[in-house]
Image (tube, rainbow, N blue to C red; front, side):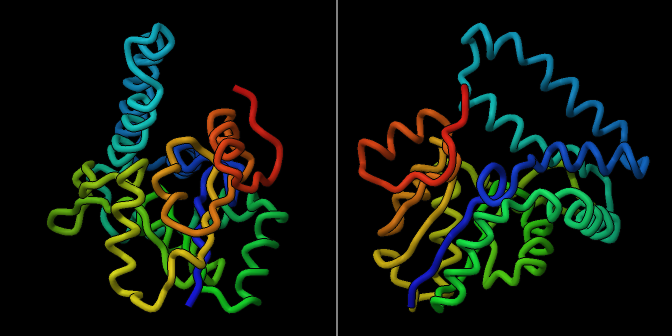
Length: 227
């Protein structure tokens, strides 16, 4: 059995999930104090990133891991409403039709389809339902007494953590042959994930991934992003 694994942000759709959460919380007047704390505390780190004190990878990890703060004290029912809203009003309108065409081609060829993203697992499950995915692998949120704590359950589905989370999920699918499978992503930090399969594809890649793909002889789909 073959499979095709797709990253979400920057690959299958043009947006960013953190922006979707901002839009939802502001529009629906939800959890705005936690949202402001998340946004302003991370914007405050921007000068340190630009000065080289914090690496780009570390900066991205902080943004991704601490995005869980935006869900602090929300109930699972509130999260369900938020994730449905985000899927309907933000994610689906920004799906790249040309990448969705590749997704559907793999379905026609009989391959299993997976979303693999740093996005919250519960949100990714809703997006996966809309796209008729066979499975999703995302970042798990910690809950206590039915409410989100503002923390994730490690590992973060980013970098090597993305490959780790996918390997754990694939225990349930022993029939999938990774050497005959495909993976699609846009970031240099997706290399551990991409290298798990026989056919990795750089999609609208950042310059670093485009260069790496060129050296490795990987296909590149779409325009290389500017720095």
